[in-house]
Image (cartoon, rainbow, N blue to C red; front, side):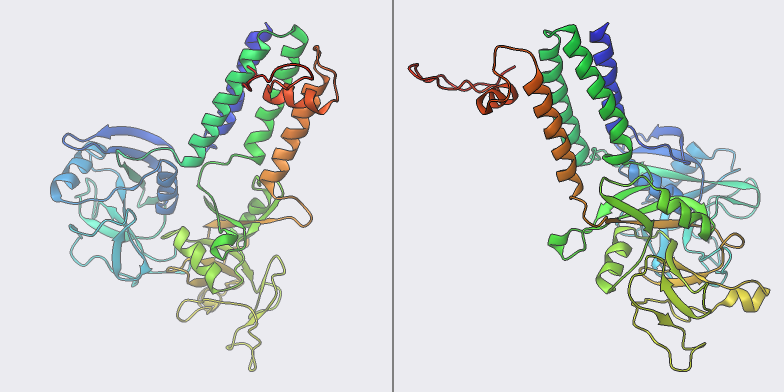
Amino acid sequence: MYRNLLFSNCVLVFTAILEPRAHAVTIVQTESRSGSDHIYHLLSPSTWTDAEAFAVTLHGHLVTINDAAEEDWLWTTFNPDGTSLIWIGMHDVVHRGTFVWTSGEPVTYTNWQTGEPTSGIYDTPFLGPESYAQMGYGSIPYPRFWNDLWNIPTWAGSPMQGVVEIPSEAVPEPSTLVIACMGIVTLVTVAKRQFRATAAKRAKWSGLLLSLSLLLPSSVVRRGDCAPVEWPVLDGGNGHFYEFVAESLFWDAAFSAAIARPSPLGYTAHLLTISNSPENAFVANTFPGMTGWMGFTDRDVEGEWRWIDNTPGVWQDPAVFPSPIQTAFAAWAGGEPNNWYTESYNRTGEDFGIFNWGTGMWNDGVGPDVGSTFNYFVEFEPMSSIPEPSTFLLGIIGVLALATWTKAPGPLSSGAPSSIMRRIYGVKTVMPGRSRKSTSLYV
């Protein structure tokens, strides 16, 4: 019984490490193309940014189309009746009017509908920019011509479905492999030793593994959306982590959801705040083509923009303040902020910052609980007076290990330094009057 319980809890630990967090986008069809070693997945209906974010978690991107033959295969394979519209990996978010592939491959083939792309003519504050390419135009059954469209999950009653392309060389990220290998070695070693131990010790280890399985999902390993990316201090960064969340919400809902995001040990979460140009460039380059809410607002005083986390500085709009104070960093897109929604629709105003309205550019949007919904960016920053997460976690594991082994029954005298080292590392020590023994791993 104890052996089965220990094995079950080992499975729980690995599930916590390797299983992605539930995501709104799912895979509905998987195919391979003759003559190609790439894998293609058709996704459930979603926005373009949701589909691309999910593609990244699969170690791919929305599909890159290199020629008419590939386009024909994609269309007949994933949309044979022509009733859906297909997101592809092309956008002009970086430079409006210049469409590029998210995979970074050169543009060698296009099939735009006549008059497309319109490149900004139909941009609106409610729907955002028409920056995302899709296949299908006109009426059902759709011909496979391309069009640029807003970041929306449906159009004219037809679902918008992304197709993901995954290269054959795509492998799990290194951190996943390292964690998995370390976990396998550790658990096999523990299991091998404890299966020879008493029932009481087996139960103790089973309980410890169960505790770890509950700890890991919320504190150590995080998956889904675009996994948090660190801006390392050694690279001139601030040591914070940044995440793009593919969940379209009003600003107030995004504000609350960001705070509630599961955080690494010793970190706190909030909507993205930007202190300077290097930070702005890092986040923009880390999440290209992805647009979402950030924590900049002038809701309290019209035209006076402040950060939600009290990041120093204020940015006053020259259109509102004759002698504006602008001590906060800002990277507004041309003509922004313009509070356009108020003037055009007699609503409450565009009081909330949108990041990546064009690479690294900002826009003001409406949407506390009405108006526009967008995905959002989350920033994780260290809590004051808290050890760095990995050090904190290793410390806890170290204490548990020492406590477990020094209290374990056996011929060694508990508490003695040599006893502790022998129990943890299996080192055979040299006793007075005896010849030196070789060191070996105690397994």
